[in-house]
Structure formats: C-alpha cells, structure tokens
Image 1: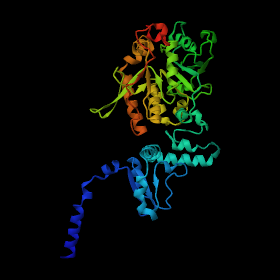
Image 2 (image 1 turned 30 degrees about the vertical axis):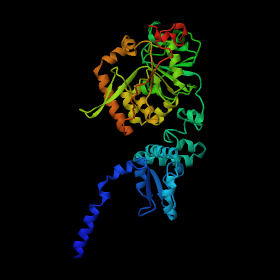
Image 3 (image 1 turned 135 degrees about the vertical axis):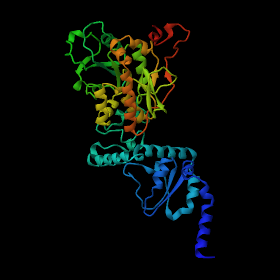
Image 4 (image 1 turned 30 degrees about the horizontal axis):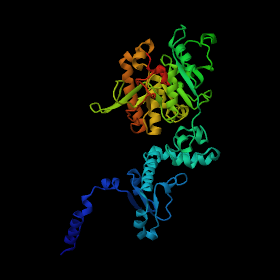
Amino acid sequence: MSRQTAGVEIWAKMASSPIDRYDYKEMLHNSTFCLVPRGRRLGSFRFLEALQAACVPVMLSNGWELPFSEIIDWNTAAVIGDERLLLQIPTTVHSIHQDKILSLRQQTQFLWEAYFSSVEKIVLTTLEIIQDRVLEHGSRSSLMWNSHPGGLFALPQYSGYLGDFPFFYAPLGIKPYPKFTAVIHAVSPLVSQSQPILKLLVAVARSQYCAQIIVLWNCDKPLPAKHRWPATSVPVIVIEGENKVMSSRFLPYETIVTDAVLSLDEDTVLSTTEVDFAFTVWQSFPERIVGYPARSHFWDSNKERWGYTSKWTNDYSMVLTGAAMFHRYYHYLYTHYLPTSLKNMVDQLANCEDILMNFLVSAVTKLPPIKITQKKQYKETMMGQSSRASRWADPDHFAQRQTCMNKFASWFGAMPLVHSQMRLDPVLFKDQVSILRKKYRDIERL
C-alpha cells in the first residue's frame, strides 16, 4: 500500500468516526462541565464558549490568569483543576452537589451576559476596572461585580453604599425608605383652577406615603405665581425644566431625597387610594417599574422589525411613566449610562422617553414591569384630556414609537423587554364583601 493510499484510508476512518456524527454546539449546550485545557498558549477560547453555553468550565491550565480575575470571583463559576492531577478530575466533578452545579451554571450566564457577551462590554469592563484602580476610594465592591446586575450597572459615582441600589435590597435584607417623591411633568400653561394637574397634585399630596411633590415645569410659558398652586400638607417644589426637553423629567434632581419616585404626566387621573396602592406594591418590587398604563411590543415578521402596540391584550411588557413608580437610581442611570444619541432622539421627537426608561430597567433587571389595577381604564380616562387625546389620534405618534423601539433594541444589542401576564390587585378586589372591609375602597368606585 502506498503512503498516499494509507493517508486516504486514515482520513476516511476519521471522517466516519462517531465524533463526526455529533454537532459541536449542540453537545456544548447540553453539557454540564466543559474541559478547558491550555491551547497553544495558556489561554483558550474554549473558555468563553463554555461560559456562553452555561457549561461550567473545568480549567486545566496551571498559571493562567483568568480574565478580569481582579474583580471576578471565578470560584463561583468555574472548577479550577490542576494539570498534574488530571486523572482526579472525573472524581472531583462527580462530587459536586446538584445545587452547587446549578449555582455555577447560573453564574456562568450572569458573567457572560454582564462582561463578555460583546466587544463593547469587554472594553467597558476594562475601562471601569481601570477607573476603580485610579479612584480606589470610590471603587465598586466585590458584591457589585459578582452579583446581578453587575458592576457596569452599579455606578460608583452615584454611591458607594450598596443600600442605595434597588437590586441589592434583597441580598442585604434591607427595605427602601417608606415615603415617595412625586414628579409631575408639566407642559401646559396654568390658566384655570380646574385643570387636571391641580386635581392630581391635591390627590397625590393626600397620600400617607407622600414626602414631597416636584412639579417639573417644561412649559414655554413663565412659571405660575406661588398662590396659583393649591395648599398642601407636603412641600411642593416647582423646578423649571432643563432646556425644556423630555429627558429632563428623568434627571437625578438633588431635591429627590426618597428612594421611590412617582412619575406622573400633568393630565394623569389618579385617586389617593390608587397612589397608596401603587407605593405599597412597589415596596415589594423596588427594582422594577410599577404602575398603571401598560403597553406591549411584538416582532413583526413581515417587516422584520419590532412593533409597538397599545391594544388591550393578555400580556404587556412596558408600564408607561405617565403613572408609574420606580427607584430614583434609574434617573441617574438614564442620565449617565445611556448614550447621548438615544436621549437626543427622545428630545427631538418629544416622544419615547417612557419606552427608553422601560428598556433600561428591563435590561438591568431581566424582568418585566409590574402592572397594577386601576379604578378606571387609563385609556378611557386619559382620552378625555385634550392634550393627550391629540397625541393618541396622531398616526405619527405611533410611527415614531415604532422607530424608537428598533433604535433602542439596536443599541442594547437585543430586545430587553420581557412580556408578563401578571397584574396585582388589592386583597378582596371585586369580592362580594362589604366595601368597609376593604383597605383600598376607592379603587372599585367609578
């Protein structure tokens, strides 16, 4: 047999070997542990492949410094083996308890998504680590880097105290401040004492949980005189909006001293009972947006793009910030994390700021917002107001929001919004018992 014939025969046997009958990616995603030996150098790209596939890396490369090991605790996501004890690896992985395996796999997914899933995240993580080295007094803690949502979303410029971030409340066992600040976005001149904004202001001020009300004056007309505003038991602070743009409603104003922010449009119609219930629910979900008017997104396969809908369906993925509660940290994150290009788009259109805030919070939490019940349907209530009705009747309004959805999804690298079918109602809501036995009585009254 010639050397060439022998070579062909060997290749044919290799080509028909059992390993070629398996799909590499499928095997990777179906595996619990993945061996990551050294390649031509100490490191191996198999390591990132394993992370992406939620396969626990079993490291076999003595002397290799794992990526970002300065801030990442790799013992929570990988098994570090010794090349000299290779035959002990099977025994080692078989001895790991199932609960520990689940924890390891969950951490691989978190670390991949937080720091390695794109070139941008790798670069940002590198820059943030350098910043923490330079500004050591304000650097992030290990918990921030190794816990959801990760160091890129826990900006140390905001605070060095973990308790100031909504997503660390549960791990730390703490609760948010038991009051809220209402921020009412005003764009219309104050010409009558019967305007919705004044009724809204009085209803919110009566809430037992309201600490203060901020009226953000984004109207082109001068600020009204102090006597035009109704007398309330809580402070009312009127701030002239910065450049009169939409994004100014999400600026991290120093006057906001509470953890919770109740974001309101000037023509929102809410009762004191509805405000109280919203805050009560938010206290259980401080990392999410909690509110009343819900909207949804969908994938339009014909146009191959994301769509926006206000139709009343069985699910939703957004809660509009015209009547919603969320943590004040998201004001800071909106202002300092999001790119100027997206905020400029919002300001030029005077639209979509609520969608962008929902994108941001869902990208951080990986969770949907929380919709709560309301005394009247938001759509019917708001359509009675001329300023809001004109926007809803304008076809360009929805076309703009469709465009926003796709621009935002492109920047985030994926669609962060999550659908939900959950709605929270007060206990005994609509039950056939005396209204006097119900805590939130007014919600059932028209």
